[in-house]
Length: 364
Image (cartoon, rainbow, N blue to C red; front, side, top):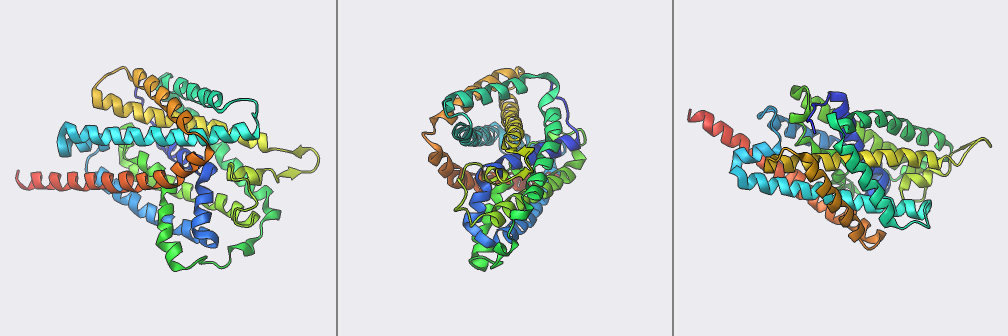
């Protein structure tokens, strides 16, 4: 498969799509459960923190133009560190993509396909993602750019169409359970910005690597807006989260949309858009993971890794016994893994590599 460079718009759409798929799953519920009526302020807060963190990431990455975290890890600690970081991120991308795959497939089974077992729905998603990854010229990025406007329009449409059901007084008390919950404990909600994990691998893919910071920050801002709108819909429409069925939170809001007797039950249209967006997300996770393994092994045929990772994705998704297990993994394990690997270890590698680079320059 050819490793075609991607433009800034494609990169922004890619990063926002990753965040969007987490938003339509369980992140809105997790944020509201943590910060309650202070959720909107908390989102603005973690959005600002994420922008600052993204700027720091881009600052360090710009010290190594056209190199990604794998290349920088090799520069810092040789092949051993390169393999450790590479395998950690492959495991991170695939394992948690499998969690979301199980959750989304379970939701589709309960809502629309009661007579179809989850395993078959999971299989169809995996096949679609693998096929998308094997198409030449990185078609998944261009296809995602087409799907991206649908994501924007559908989210805004839900907010506008359900406007009459929104009770804005539900945002009080503004600080919810207090300052500590909103700004300290609520900092854990930063894991909503999952696009951060993929920024580390963007420089070699961009046609214009010098625009990395612009791409990254724009994607964080857009992701924050999507998250803000989505949480506002749930927070203002329902009593906390009691009245929703906890299956695709936004789906509960979509069911209220109707325009006279002609436009009713539009939920299937929105679910179709979400399915397309989710296939795009799975394709991106497989593509990035395959690229990492290709770089680790120096094997040119990337398709081999795509097929193997597709198989791993399938079995990891069906391994989860029920929806409750997936929720626990997404809300707890995923969160700790994000802060450990994406925030902690990765930033430490970039910082250490930058120090090593400066020391070498001093002694030249």
